[in-house]
Length: 495
Ligand code: NAD
Image (cartoon, rainbow, N blue to C red):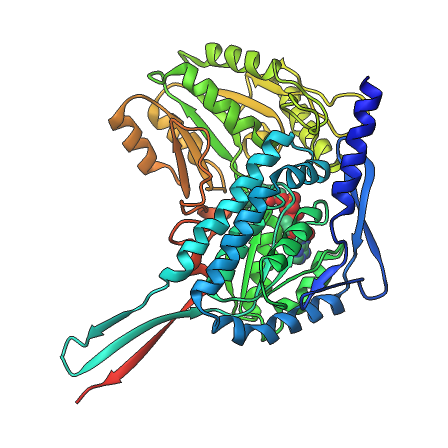
């Protein structure tokens, strides 16, 4: 029985993977990388090869920029309604094909298929949102204060963009950039992460089917990210870089972008504190903690990285959280009912193990888990750690795995100071039923976003982004399209 089910699954899996174009997408056509090199994509639940895609060279990257630059003028002058309709049609196609796209995403990235469905829906929503924003790009007309002239302010597309995306949300981290760029009238070269290129390739094909003209979006997959993107960053035709990924790589790219004075948006790493005050609804806090910690197998920039819990409720919170995490089903993300998939690769799992070992060596206690799981694939046990000392690396570094360290605090000041004691500033979560406390704490947190009595902040209608070393610029919301628009002011003489 189970063998025949597996066989059926594998036929469907092969069909879904086999349907994805695997070349570079340049000027509306698919072709091999120059020299024909291929890059292997793995299934993280087995460690086995899943597919091969083109391994682009620097020449391919420049050809992609040639195509983007050639398409820029006509795309910028395409009516906003037409640009918006391409996004709207793509939203509808993504929604209609959610099952296949979700399976594809789970196969290359590992997360449970229910979460992949949610990501495809979330990714598609950015297109629906920016389809609506495309027709609302406005400017202004004002009278000079001295009455003698008129001021005209218009907003125009910034021009060709380089968009670099990470592996943890293989589609949504792309559509958050593609949606506003397309709406604003920019052309693009997109470089998806080498671990998860398939979702972006599938998306490019769907955008073309929805009517995106050749050259507006170009996609290069490569194992040599730095070599392929550096010449683009130095090229005068490029006008903007939008990057989502680690702070270490983001920092290097800001330096390269500075030489060419590029517009830059940076969505970088996080170290989200999750604060639970003594007046919190503890059940709601545990529920929010499960979402903030376990969504995406903990591999999210928004993942709760450390739990600061008032000392009067810390033990009970830890016990309840361990109960919930311990009851989660770990397995291959393609199986219905699985709630925790593998980590994306061996490197990522080794990093999680290293951080847990560091904390336990310093005196932390594993109330749950605390080790990698045996067998094929890159699985790590859901883990709750108590007695985590202040020096533990996981309180400062992104864990990116299913690990919840719990640290008690005594006062509100202490909680806020601990929350802000990090180079990062992406998101924080706060659980309290006190209105005054909520406002006091939210105002003092040094982050771009706060989840107030809520374990999830991602929303296409909201401005997503960080402060400090979590980056700058906003994706989504009314702000998202501003990143792709340049302001032009015209001084009009009026006698
Ligand atoms: P990463 O920085 O290693 O890679 C991100 C992307 O940059 C990939 O496409 C990679 O190929 C490319 N890249 C790597 N080196 C490069 C170079 N020298 N030049 C040009 N491109 C290069 O990050 P990752 O491991 O793929 O993703 C995880 C990180 O992303 C985490 O730190 C996470 O917090 C962050 N992230 C942030 C957000 C956000 O919105 N703030 C969202 C998701 C992920």
